[in-house]
Length: 121
Image (tube, rainbow, N blue to C red):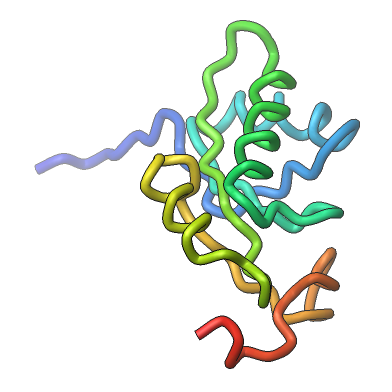
């Protein structure tokens, strides 16, 4: 029976890379320790559409230090105005892995979050 399990490069299932200088500071550390990560979408402005997720993913990959491997798994920020067809297309294309619901005002950068849950059912 195996006595030891080695996880060589684990996954991070809740990563806030943010953008700009914060992205450039956090990403190298994360990429050094993790193979992939679910990237949180609560930027200002939030990552709501497939096009915004693609642009954010491009910024992440551009900031990745040369020679490092890292797979950012993109997440959309659910709003009352999110387009179900856009969400479905982004998922079908393999662009997004998840959609996150933020109740408005409940956490950092959640001002664009959901106020009326009946609108997102």
